[in-house]
Image 1: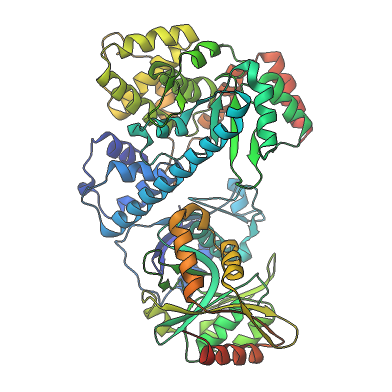
Image 2 (image 1 turned 135 degrees about the horizontal axis):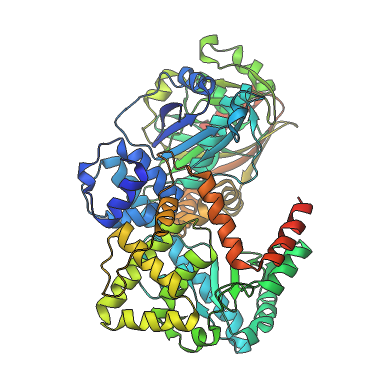
Length: 337
Length: 288
C-alpha cells in the first residue's frame, strides 16, 4: 500500500497505527510533511501506541504547532490594532480563523500568511492603515502589482518589516475575473464572532470558502489539507446544528458555489469517510481525477503525476480568467521570463 | 528512489535518496562507523534528484530536495553530490527540527562540559573544532549545536566535518588519510573535504554536555580576547539560531539561560595554533 494511502487511512481512522511496520512510517512522515500535515497527523494519533522515536517526533510537532498558532493569532491581533483605529472591521479567514474559533481542524494545522477579509469599500483605507503600521509591499514587479489590484480578490501581499509575516487582505474570496462571483457583502455582513473575539465567517460560509479555495480557485496543491478542514468542519457544524447541510446548500447557491461544495463533500466522503445526508450522496464520474490528484504522491513525498498536476494547474487558470485574458496574461508572463 | 541510505547523526535519523549511486556510495564511506538502527523510522528526508530524466546522464546535475526545500537553489554537478547531500541534511535540520534550540555553531566537550563556538563561515569555528577534536576534546559538531530547552544541556550533532580551503591541509597533516573524504575542488563554497570524526566522538554522540564557555572566533588579526556581555551574546545567538523564532517562549527562555549561565568572549587569532592556545587559556581561566 502506498504511503499516501496509509496516511489518509490513518487520518480517516481506517487503519490502526499499531499495525504499521516501523519502516512504513518513513513514507507516512514524508508524505505528511509534503502536505504540511505532520502536526495534524500527530494530533490525530495523540495517545496511540507508536514507535518511541515517532512518538517523540509527533510530540515536537504538536508543541511547535501550538507555538505557531499562538504567533498566528498574535499577528491577527496586530492587524486588529492597525485597523481598528480607522474603523475597519475584518473577518479572519482560513487557518487563523479556525484557530480563533477553536475548531477541531485547527489542531496542528499549519497557518501560513494571515488572511483577512474586509469590505471592498474599505480596501484602500485598509492598505494605508497597514502601511502606516509597518507592513510593506512584497511585489516589486509593476505587472504583478497591477494584476493583483485590477483582477484579484486580494491586495498584493504585504509583509511586516520587523516581524517578517505576510498578510493577505481580501475583499472577496475568488478573483474578480473568476467565472463565479460570490456575494462578498453577505460574507462580511453575516460573519459571526469567534470565542477569541475575532470575526469569522458563519459556518456555512466557512465551508463554502474552504471548498472554493480548494476546488474553484486552486490547483489542488495542499488539497488533502483543505479537504481535511472541510471534512472536520462540516462534521462538527452538522453535529451542533441539524439544519447545517440545508444552510450550506442555501449559502452555496447564493455564492454560486454549489458545484465546488458538493464535490468537496463527495471527496471528503471518498477520502476521509465523511457521512453525508441524503441529497449529497451522489457520484460524479470526474471526481476520479480529483481523487487521483490528491493521491499523487510517492513514498518519498514527490508528486507522481506531473501531467495530472499540470492539468489541474491549467484548470485553475482556466476558471480564474476568461480565455482572451488568460492568453494575454500568459504572453506577458512568458515575455518576462 | 533508486539509491538510498539511512544515517543517524545525534538525535536526527535521516533517509537520503538519490537518482545516482555515487553520492550514496560516498555517504556510505563517510558514515560507515555511525551507529545504525535499520528499524528506526526517519525523522527527515533528503532527495538528490535530476530535474529532467535525461539529466541523470547528460551533464548530470544534482538538485537538493526533501521535506523542506529552498526555492531557486542552484543544482550542483554530480562530482559535488556529497556536498549536495550535506546541504540537504543541514537544510532539513535547520528548517524542520523543533525538539531543541539549534545554534549554527561548532562545539567540543571535555569532562562533560561544552565549549560552543559561533561565527560566520570563515571565522574558523569548524577548523578550531576539528583540531581540538583531534586533541583531548570530544568533537560535538562543526555545524549545529542543539540546546535542550528544558534542561539547558548541549547535544552533539557530529556529522562529518566539512573542511574548507586552507583548513584541509592543516587538518590532513594530523589525521589518518582513511578518515578523509574525497577532495571537492572549486565548489560554490570553495574547496571542500570531509573529515570523519574520531570513533570515540561518534560513540558518545548521544551524551549531553553542560555549556561552559561561549566563544565568537574571528580568524585574522592580532591575538585578542574580548569579554562579551550577555546582551550581545544573546543577540548574536538569535542570529545564529535557525529556529529561535519558531520555538517562541521556550526559545527565549533557553537562550536567556544559556547567555546568563555561560561566560562569553570574542577572540581574534592570526593562525590555528594561536586560536587553540587562546581557547585553552580561556577554558582554564573562565569556563564554568
